[in-house]
Image 1 (cartoon, helix red, strand yellow):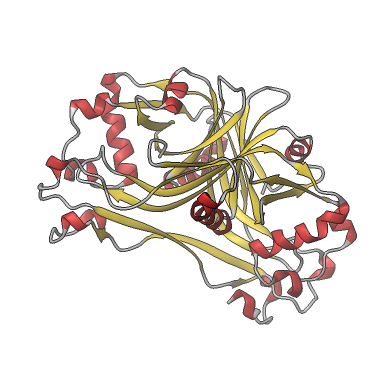
Image 2 (tube, helix red, strand yellow):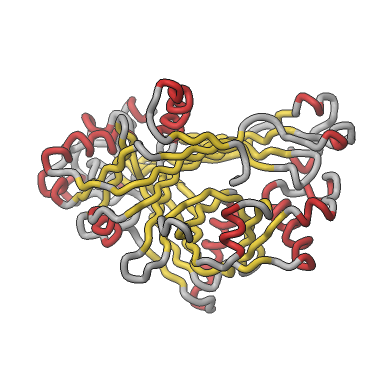
Length: 209
Length: 209
């Protein structure tokens, strides 16, 4: 997946609006980012899956204020946050030309810890990304819960995006072979809500249907 | 997603067979691994999505022998390969207790380049993981294609796995609230094959249906 079409975006400009929209769509579609950093103690690379939400020109990552990873991120260590969307298996006439259609976004930089004043909006964004409609429906967040949550933001100023799209690219001499080629689309969707044992009898709210 | 139940596996032992099976299932279900490493030139962390396949106690990663990333991996730099499967959105009565059900596996170590003799079996494993039935159906791989492909293996000896499973964990005082809680299962599946424009009229082979 690394030797395919690439498009790089260093700064946000009019020329890149289309690509920017595609990048935002990937970030908005995906729930998990893979956050890479160098462990300050061992100097080894680490890649951790974390929930995230995009809010305008930043992504928000949250975790327990006691979590070692969140504390490292809060210190402003250098990170690389990669978000990947897999769209299809690309079946060519040969194994060599078979591939995957995907879009991926790598964001580079140093995260910044949000102040208490900035937290409320960020918590709403994170919640609404995960479960649209939840913020106004759920039991409101308490001050204690907010205090126990560390939120960092990473701007989208420095990013790189890659994609492979479209049909298989077969060698010219392979196209006439009696071998099928095409795409196997990968579809991810939310299934029907499963009510928790201790919520039996409570109606599934309309924002989840 | 980082402050949930963790289970660590350092070495393969009888006691960990159940966990080992769960780990292998995640690796076998997922197409993409996020490969983290420290760029030798800039000393910055990088996280790259790459196709991979498990084969017994190793994962195989392949790419063009001209690719900068593959050449770095081939040098035996330290890497962290993370594979994540997202299973459900966990909807609690509060935003704070909402979460995601997931399984993730982090594999640590240094990759080793496969020799020409070792490549053929590895290419078959990689192809069959992506498209089961492809190896015997497709136009056979040429020596030139094999030579243009660099394959590295990373053993599963040093890994760490994490998971969040089950129902929402609400605060005791929240359970009596008239608020729904439960799971929104995430389902990923392959859709119906889409025939390539230049393969019109060729029947979709049975191994793809």
